[in-house]
Amino acid sequence: MGFKDKVKGMMSQHGDKADRGVEKAGDAVDERTGGKHRRHIDTGTDKARKTRKRMTRDEGEGGTGGPAA
Image 1 (cartoon, rainbow, N blue to C red):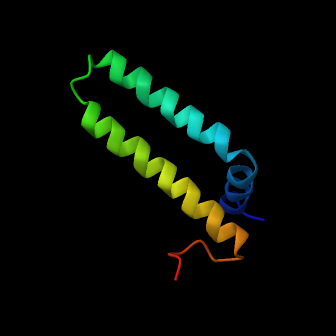
Image 2 (cartoon, rainbow, N blue to C red):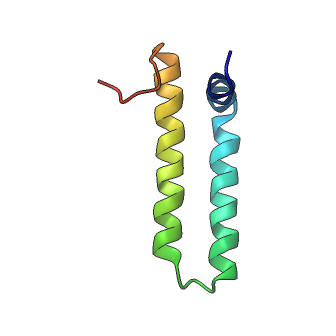
């Protein structure tokens, strides 16, 4: 089992914690930048969340980690 497979396994088991961590990190960066880059930070956190969901969906379907058909 490679590193990528281990990460996928952890994300499928602890996805909710990963999402909370991404959100918390985004909030911290937003606060540190005084809200100047809120739109970019929100875009980044949304993409991270969607990628995590895609990874766990592919894992559950026995996929190869590529785009879902």
